[in-house]
Amino acid sequence: MYILGISCYYHDSAACLIKDGKILAAAEEERFSRKKHDNDFPSKAIKFCLNSQNITGNNLDHVIFYEKPIVRFDRILQTFVESFPHSFLYFYDTIPSWLNKKFRIKSTIRKEVGFKKDILFVDHHTSHAASTFFCSPFDEAAILTVDGVGEWATASLSRGKGNKIFRLKDLNFPNSLGLFYATLTAFLGFKVNNDEYKVMGLASYGKPTYMKKFGRLLKIFPDGSIELNLKYFNFEQGRQMWSKEMEKLLGQPRKLDDKINQRHQNIAATLQKITEDVYFKMANHLYELTKSKNLCVAGGVALNSVANGKLFDKTPFKNIFVQPASGDSGGAMGAALYAWHQIQNKKRKFPLQHAYWGPQFSQKEILKFLHKNKIKYKKLSRKQLLKIVAKSINEDKIVGWFQNAMEWGPRALGNRSILANPINPKMRDIVNDKIKHREDFRPFAGTVLQEDVNKYFEVPEKNHRSPFMLFVFKVKPEARKLIPAITHVDKTCRIQTISREQNPLYYDLIKEFKKITGVSVVLNTSFNLKGEPIVCTPEEAYNNFIKTPMDYLVLGNFLISK
Image (cartoon, rainbow, N blue to C red; front, top):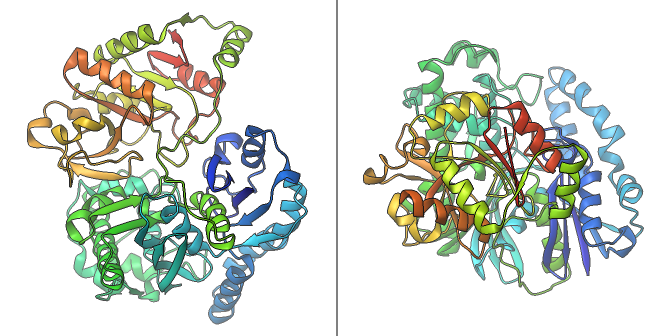
């Protein structure tokens, strides 16, 4: 039984194909369209999914959409009526997309997918819950989903058991932790649904000195529910998310090109502190409702890896699973898995061991690209490749690393990565400035051999697994001098653990680096330039390579240098 899950029209459109409950392919539309956070109908992602199995829409048994558009529109319409005339401009901006796209989702699916049977719909937060629980290794778990807003829900507390999810409690619009974070992200001069992780990184440079003033923005209740003071927010009514009252309270908002100062850093730090307080209260309340030792998390707020790392200390949960594509893109996977388990009532048999579900290119295809463009290269054996690249990283060369299937979700996990030396304290600034062309306060993640994670990081358990780079932990004091390039200003690092079973080539590369240096960690950042999605094809990887001072590009077994 083939099932196709689709998410689109808000941000990070995506498609996911499963067969008999097992994932076959999944990808975000942005990787094909090259529009970052592309929200359009994911025609190209769907085409990839179907082509990967040599099938068409006629072979599909079900197509399922990740939310219920009519229910969402009901919320928008009700908000418009209650806020009129202040909400007119917002409604004026919004209604064309509903008339031209969102109300026509069924006809669009039939046309673009070639699917003639009934189309299924599942609500937004159930898609999020399914995306994390049905992929998890747990037979039963508490499930927490937190984002901006779905139809009405902005957060949900659920319990999963076997092949069923039971919704326990919702927090509803306009009270939203995700929209609260997004509003302050915009206030600080960053892009909503794009730059929230920048604010998370910036927070480490400040102190939460605005707690008293932030207390006017929202009430926080013991169960983690919140009530926003809407006099400070404008996302219901206008094109700007905050009101003039917020400017009176917090000062002038930062413009895009304004230099970041201590006030901005302190606002970011306060925002992170408030977010964590609410997040932990929600999780603790969920524990009281379920008494489960296992927690599954999804939704855009679940990409806050700093908060995720603290869940182990701030809650009673012992085992925590976070979906690698926790934002809206993950809804496509969740919808497909929901159709298989909860609608078809099929047993679970698929824990998510890795996130390599995107396009891949054979050595023959890569060679064809190199010859067509008359690009000089060296073809290396696997052993030669590992030795040369590990040695180059040790010599402070920066390497574009393009291998096998592209990652699912926003993190590069060793197949579409830029790799560098974590030992050189200058490497963070070099990669930020010369390669990524991004803000100097942005930290880098580290990939560490699974068996050595305890050597470098203060993880909650021996051999802690973090394959999807969604947890931040303290770097051990004795390790900070060993890996300064990935040790953030607050002595933490976002980590990816890697085992040979997950990714044999990437694991063996770090193993080779360890033989040379004694350090079993590399600096890993996504293979993309500022404002672009992660590269998908050899051509995109090469174009990124020639635009930067990157030293080497590895495409499969082919080494390209300048």
